[in-house]
Image (tube, rainbow, N blue to C red):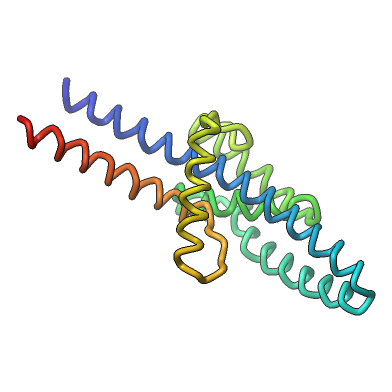
Length: 180
């Protein structure tokens, strides 16, 4: 009985992290999309040449995103996909769906597969917003400490959640074992 309960708790923890990963992916995609639009607007204000160069870079970025998303439309990809790959692909698809039909198709396929396979609405995975905000604060701190200037992906944030959960569980175990 205890073993079965342990599996149930493990499944809940995995589901929670996956839901959190999907929510974070959605939010990161929104941030990316808004930042891209702001970059275009800023470049247009600075001049035609700069705006044209930015559009060319964004076209190349969109093509790279589409190349990364194309496999999500195949059954083979879904046979091999884990939660981290799904969350990263969801982030990429959501970030480009307003300007790419392929990204829009990928977002629909990912949403449908996540619903069918895991019973989770990818667009609204049911995560407490304060948990997401806390994770973003942790991620911002991590990004500042790394100094790379790179934004974290959903799977990297899921790994941070795993690390934080493991650390909390370890600390909880230490504090109870000291007094036991």
